[in-house]
Length: 217
Picture 1 (tube, rainbow, N blue to C red):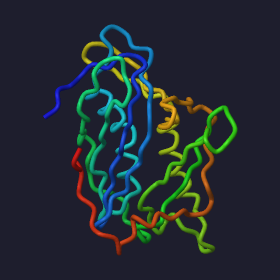
Picture 2: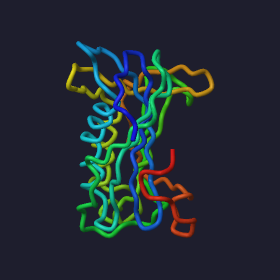
Picture 3: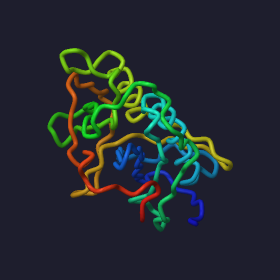
């Protein structure tokens, strides 16, 4: 099991939230920058717990009872200290509580995440996995209920998360991470919830089964 590791300001984090329905995983990948640390700051374990506490209950509130929010994996991808092993948090793992029947696995909600800059490179996307039938209107667009769930989740992924640990505090600022340049753009321009459903073919029931969380490192 990995050792809980303090991470300093400037560390770039990658979080992966894992949902599971039938034989398929729905994974939301987001990035964060550690800042405003006070006293001894916070550990990767404490940061993972804080993110899970924000997003886990939202996933569980809209997922059908046949689906689950399985947990969150957090790993540092850039830091001034040696990078620790990923931290897996299962504190918010739970089955969905929504009684509405699920839509096909490949259907998903979509929010466009904005920065203060123009261009496709400076935007992010949040594909919200495994919506239910209460999300869809008679004409096939996203209902007000579905849009509210997407909005709730996008709010958490585009806002700062304040972490209080045993030895101090810190803030996780959401960013767009550019792998090619190893640079980032802060999120902060809000988001736009799409009125139409998106699709992700890899989540379709005909695909090979995905492993449950936690997957291999």
